[in-house]
Image 1: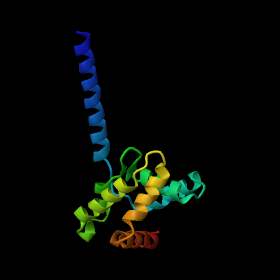
Image 2: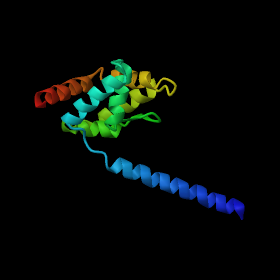
Image 3: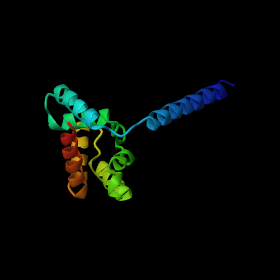
Length: 137
């Protein structure tokens, strides 16, 4: 009887956790220029200008990174959906995320995966995106 009760409690906790994470995922919105620059400034101050720590802080605040799974390829692809290469971009981000995964050095993982993913065409898209944001400021 106690075993059954414990199993029911475990399943209940699992369902609650899934519901919470599903709800959190559904409220994510594309980052705005103001969000990017405000969060970037906060992250620079928090990380004392250290590049890898600043990057990880920024992508966490923008909802593009978790310490458990790294970059969220789907969300990143949504930002660049106008390039009509979402599937390809997701593959690149996922590949780099897996290749550089290092849960004991999270800042390095975030930085190296970013550098890997932006070494090609995606890097040009990021530069264009950020330069558009500077014009809006």
